Amino acid sequence: MVSSLASSAYLWISATGLFMGLAAGQGLKALVSTGEGFLRARRRRPGRQARAIAFLSLGILSLAGLLVLPPKPLSLAIGEAACWAILVFLLAGLAGFRPLAAGLPLAALCIAGLMLARLALEGWLPLRPVAAGSPYLVASLLPYEVGPSSFRGHLELPERDSVPVAQEVGLGAALAAVSVESLALSGPLAFLGDLALVPAPASNADSLRLYRVVGIAAPGGLSQSFPVPSHILYLDRILPLPPGAGAEPGGEAASLFAFFGLASRSRLTSPPKPLIALEPVTFSVSLEEGSVKFR
Image (cartoon, rainbow, N blue to C red; front, side, top):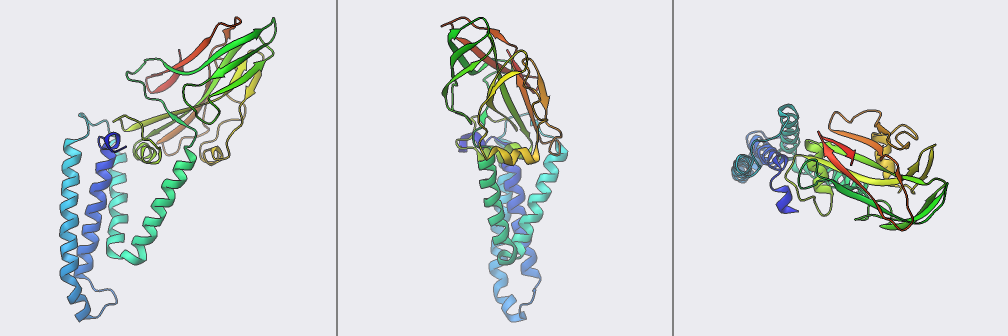
């Protein structure tokens, strides 16, 4: 996890804002006495000044890490990065100025947020091929019984997402397609997604693309949807998809809205493929111009 996150620019932006904010909060606390007696504030001033200097040193070190470690050139949206840095700085400054009244609640909220993000992203797999546009296997189907208007077969996934790795499927058609949902995170949400995922994706990009297989389909509206885990409902409240959209083979549907432009969710179904008994069929996707396409 460390090696993949260490090259993320948002890691170092967050660390710089955190330590600089703590330094500002402790420095301001050393100068201003809030409800403390003059003598008590004077006794505590050297310790607060020392902590402010230590946090400032860590902030400068984090800034050096931002300039050195992330790959160049930085593919950052300056506005998003600046807003994130200011937000982290202000919250850290509040925590540094009032460690007990504000610092502990903020720390608890951050931990709870990461746990909630971990739960919401459970069952999603990172989609990061070695090269852009290269095919990425998402499922393979082995039909062992194919008739004129029906088939039964064995669907297998390379990794477990929200459904079992292997299961039996069947539809009333001699063609089959696979439906996949895609979740795109960028900017600070991609960084938080990397933190929440265990293990973190082995990538240094400041964007994150996740996917999960949601079912199979055939022409004519025939489909077999896989059971939806309860934790997917968290995303349904934030990034809902139109009901039944994107289920027709070759179809695609995007989420009703994007979360401040930092997150988007879509569902796409591959073109139908003819089936022959005991001949495996594979379904692959690729990242083309930032979007997922079936190959």
